Image 1 (cartoon, rainbow, N blue to C red):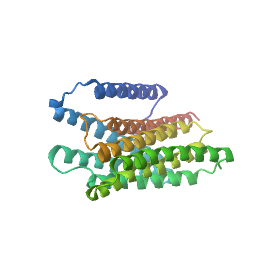
Image 2 (tube, one colour):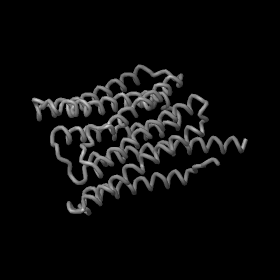
Image 3 (tube, helix red, strand yellow):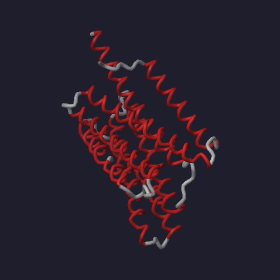
Image 4 (tube, helix red, strand yellow):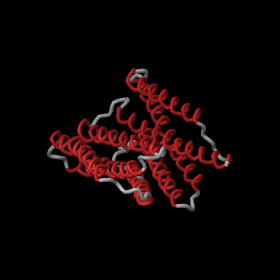
Length: 276
C-alpha cells in the first residue's frame, strides 16, 4: 500500500513539527520537572529521543522502498535508514546504562553504534553526489569551501581549543573519553560537507527542500555533539535537562521532515503519471 502525501498533509506535518519543537523548548527550560522527579524527567527524555529517532529510520526506510531497493537511489536511502537505525540503537543502549546500571554511558558500547552510523550515511551521500551529473560552478565550490572552513574553525575552537584550555593537562583516565568526544564533530563535518555538495547540485529542483532539511538536521546534530563534548569533558556534570539533548531530538525531527518531503515529491510524480 502506497503512502501518498498531499501538500495539505505536508503542511500539517511541518506545523506539527513546529508545535512539538516549541513544546519541547518550553518543557526543557520551564522547570516543569523538579530535581526530585529526575527519574520521570529522564523517562520523558528517553521517550522523546528514541521515538523520533525510530520514526526517522522508518520514514527513510519507506523512501528507500518507494525508490525500489534494487536501484541505486533506493540503496542510498536504505543506507540513510541504516544510519538512523544505528543511532536509535545507540540511544537505547545509552538510556539503558543511565536508567538501569551504574556504568557511565560515555564512553560505552553506545558510542560504537553512534559512530558507526556515520559510515552508511556518509557512503549514501557520496553515492548520491556521484549520481548527480550536474557539475558545481567555481562560485559554488568557493561558497562550499568557505562555509566548510568557517564551520570547521568553529568546531576546532569549541571542541578542541577551548576544552583543552579548561582541562589541560588531560588526566590519563579521561584521554579516551576526550578522544571519542572529538570524533563526533569530525564525523558531523564530513556529513555536512557531503550534504552541501548534494544540495548545490540539486539546487535547481524542488527536491532540494528535502536536502535543506537534511542539512539542518546534521547542523543541529553537530551543535549537539559540541555541547555534549563540552559537558562531559569540561563541566563533567549534567543538568536535569541538557540543551544538547534538544539539538539531537530536533535533528531527528528534521530528518523525519526531510523523508516526508521526499515522499510528497514522489507522490506528486506518481499522481502525474496516473493522470497521464
